Length: 262
Image 1 (cartoon, rainbow, N blue to C red):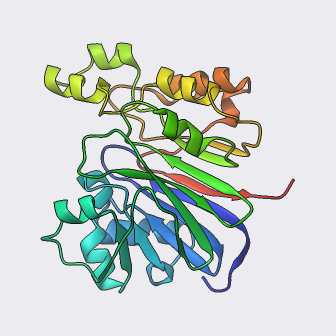
Image 2 (tube, rainbow, N blue to C red):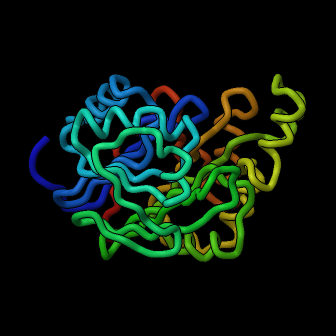
């Protein structure tokens, strides 16, 4: 793919416990947020979106868990792509060889090409996890997954976004009756684990969502949730039809979504 895009757009390569990656594109800049698939699978999923892997300008990593990190080292070396990560994530993965390293603070904005990044810390059981707001000076995409509970700072960061990719990991009843061992159920439902459908819906009710053009369910558990439950919870919170809420699937991901001027 050559040339740039006039509107900021994003797509999800896949989302869930088996791998996560999201690509954001604006003008002449294309950024991959997380790379939780093998290099070959990442390349295949980028091609499905019409992108060559060599078109990726940088990897921005939220934390070191394998479903967000699996392909980072090899992808960065094979395609000579710099990796942006927090000092804590770097410390957790310092044995992994990367093409080049750029450290970012989860409290300070930074820019890569035509895109601005506004990271923010989240409560999750990783070394120094962060999530991201991505902007182009006009539109704002909020990326929020792998978080045990929404803090006031998280709410302030995702307020008034034009698009939001939001974790709806589990349904509490399905988690309680599901196949996970007790310790894993406790981790998932804990304050450093993952958001339930109800917690995600409560977040929506506590922010300004009037500018949302796109709302995407992410990191949904294949064992402890169902897409229609997550869609219904967010739709009720937003007072919209469930089919307006998109789902980023583990296998299919989510095709391109553009943020346009109204």
